[in-house]
Length: 345
Image 1 (tube, helix red, strand yellow):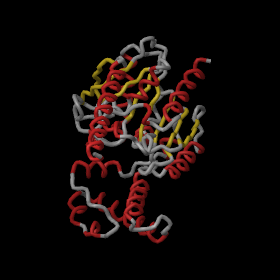
Image 2: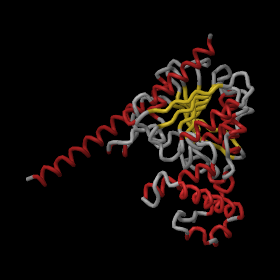
Image 3: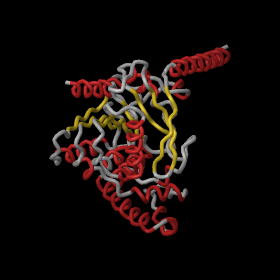
Image 4: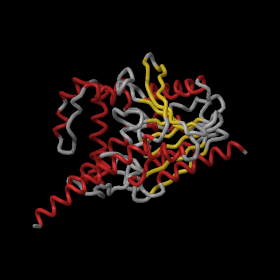
């Protein structure tokens, strides 16, 4: 009897989850968007402009800047609760499929962070030509977008930036990722200083191998070390890492002339948020730009993407606002809305 009840409950849960997902998709369909194409670096990119019903040419537009991976314009539904919350404030949003994703041409793995910044600049120009000459334009970026932002210090048509889970330095981030993995595996303890020094030495050697090229990298015995992960087998991914491994935010952030909100989850296991906070603050403190300012906020009980660490199963179907940590979306939206109010005064 207990076994029977288990299967009944499982079927009911799956049905409720599917119904919930369908209802969520229905609410998402209420968001009005138009499909747009624009050219960047000899490729045509395809994206969506979500425009609230009463949005005017003077209301803000937020451009989404993806993190790592083959992302479509809504990051597999992850952006939709944020888009909906911004729309409630009459703020439009614009994002596109990465090169090689969906109908967008090209290959995102062939891009440098400077290339990605050029995409953002081309998107801004597209929006200006499309009739939004007066709109404030800001960015909302995730993780790897920090290095895209750093390459936009000379873009004069941006009014603000919001960065979620941003990393400061690629090599330091690699060291942190190795440390997290080894601690999780139980190979080292979190306070093992000798292990941390060894990690630094190994990643420095790996850096040299990556710089030397794919064949040298694969042939080296370094990855036989028990601390090391499996080598990168995909050559396209290897070349992407090689092209961007020197990425660092300091120079670019110190030249930004706008306000930035850097927001983090306290349960982020992908980015060393304490390192990012220190490096971001150092860069902005070094700035002599008139309008440069940095606000940093850490959200409690939130992951790298500001989602709750204990996500329910229905999150597998689509991401909803309830899946984000409480106050995460509100903090971003209210900050952006405040920048609009400040500009209007």
